Image (cartoon, rainbow over all chains, first blue to last red):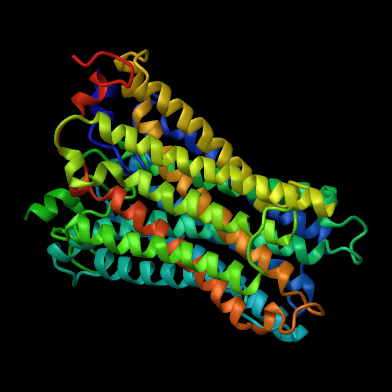
Amino acid sequence: MAVLAEGEGEVGSLHFAAVMPDLPFLPFCALLGSLGLGCVAFVGAWCQHWRGGFAWDGSARMFNWHPVLMVTGMVVLYGAAALVYRLPPAWRGPKLPWKILHSTLALTAFILAVLGLVAVFNFHNASGTPNMYSLHSWLGLATILLFSCQWVAGFCAFLLPYAPIWIRALYKPVHVFFGSTILMLSMASCVSGINEKLFFSLKNGTASVPYKLLPPEAVFANILGLLIILFGVLVLCALAKPSWKRPEADSLDTHQPLLGAEH
Amino acid sequence: MAVLAEGEGEVGSLHFAAVMPDLPFLPFCALLGSLGLGCVAFVGAWCQHWRGGFAWDGSARMFNWHPVLMVTGMVVLYGAAALVYRLPPAWRGPKLPWKILHSTLALTAFILAVLGLVAVFNFHNASGTPNMYSLHSWLGLATILLFSCQWVAGFCAFLLPYAPIWIRALYKPVHVFFGSTILMLSMASCVSGINEKLFFSLKNGTASVPYKLLPPEAVFANILGLLIILFGVLVLCALAKPSWKRPEADSLDTHQPLLGAEH
């Protein structure tokens, strides 16, 4: 009853131990990768097919970069960054290359998110629309700010050679907790943003078929929202599965800062 | 270095072990209770002060029950139900009374959520508005359906005497994972719903000050959204903290079904 032993003691956290005891990580990861690419393809197709495509000129076509960059950065790339330590090759040998991959993916996600903010701010400024008034914008900006703190703190604690071991040990579960929390906040921001955009775009009077009559665009973008939720929940599930975690103690973690001598 | 030992091996799940090693659960719980009551008070005050109050007559005042019942049921009561096993008295003695409390709180949350659905469906039907077209409504209904499955499966597995021990052991981590996931989906539903309602209510042309100029109602309801997120994240944090979990093995769990003889 290894399954039983694994499941016990995990009550109350996002743990998903016993149900898939023998499912290998890599096929699950391939499914997750397809789902992530599906999210990017869906958000791109929505903006290209129904919202007029892309430009970088302050127009509504500049706004379209906002959902694409946010979904690609804060959901899909962020999810990939979170899963780096679950890859079986990352379980063996030195941890440093995987730490660099993790932080690089997260930094790329952050850069895309900042570009996504530039896209929406420029569009608002060019069209005379105020910034930062909706709950979506408050939550979205709070998520990005939290993510920037998370990245800087993670870089200082785990890659630079200055943090003492006890600081790393103290900060690690906080970094892990906020890792899942930021993904969750990103999902809530995306859902509220897609919902908001559809109400703006499919208004009675301006749209040929308004949102409330569920034209194809509405069905398509609603499905995009559900795909984002599904992707995020599966990432949280993969993160929480005990048997997919790096099995050995993380002793190397404290000995391989980016700038320090390896010993 | 008990803190270090506690923090290790928890990487990747919503674990928050080391940062608050000595914080007692009950003061945290009191803070959480105040925050939960604050959420209920905020959503009630919003609907009473700015949205015209409450009625059960198909009008917009009937709709106002929707946010109040959803926040009270699917966030605050649901959070309380999730935290029952973290109360130190629940760590000792038979688990059955705490299982009954957990399922009763969850059932009450479910009943409030169903009444919240009745409020919005009746309002839509009375005003000729279509139901179930927005992403908010799709996500919200999916959350309630998942919650109903979770409640029925939990009741059958852990309270009725028929489920064999291996089924309980297999299902328990799934129940726990979906417990956190449903709270997360509730938060996303609430945020998208508040955002949507403010765009409806504070439209250019009909509102004295539109949403984009951030009238007091908009600030108030945006803060409500952030309070809901804060409450939910703190509940997830409390659930994830290893030292707040029932310390002993859950052996009683499998011996105390509601209708079975205790042995």
